[in-house]
Amino acid sequence: MSISIAGKTAIVTGAAHGVGLAIAQHFVDEGANVVFADRNEEALVHEVGEQADREENVRIFAGDLRKKLCVKNLLSATIDAFDSVDILVNASRQATITEALDKEDTSIEQLLEQNMMAALRLSESTARRMIKQAEDREDGSVGSIINLSSIAGRRAHPKTLGLSISAAASEQMTRSLAVALAPERIRVNAVAFGSVLSASLKDALKDDDDARNAIIAATPMGRIAGPSEVAHAVQYLASDAAGFVTGQVITVDGGRSLLDPAFVPLH
Image (cartoon, rainbow, N blue to C red):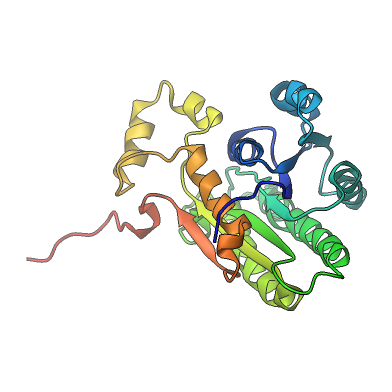
């Protein structure tokens, strides 16, 4: 089967920057209709505004998807523009430092709300729309939902408690939704990644060779991933080529989550 997504309609959240933007742009290049969704309207307009005015298969939507009304409005805007929705990519994620013993630190609740609960609510609403529009379709996949996660969900670090918990929750949400939606022929999968050389990471590492070298040293493949490498994994899961794949978490990290940095050979 082909990994083509040409002609399909996709919603990509977190699409004003980083990996979300890379995925949305890649989908456009592959011929999909794409709604770039993000709560940062200024960044959306800066990155995609002219393209949305120029290209019929591109739309932008600004709104806080933690709010139920924004979820409803996003789906309405997508249907108004393209008549249907076939793919949802939940790429809107936050990563902040968590101080586990700081009683004033609310980052865990914030990250769970942003990285898991907002994606869950949007997934449920989108799934209902996918089912409704496919009432007369007797075979084939009805839709595909892809969640972005992090290898932090399987690793532990004292400063990433919130990210690790929310990533683990997102991956279990993926598996649970996959089972719940399988009878409706909606597939739900996830892509977990480590460090990706987005614009923000490039800027952060620009004057910090030690940090760059530490990431590379922790990665068996000896480099940092490019955003397109995540986008290609997401495209596969969105395509008919993955028609019998659901409830899976594909890891794109160059082997980083496999490496035990404390291993000492026995003599």
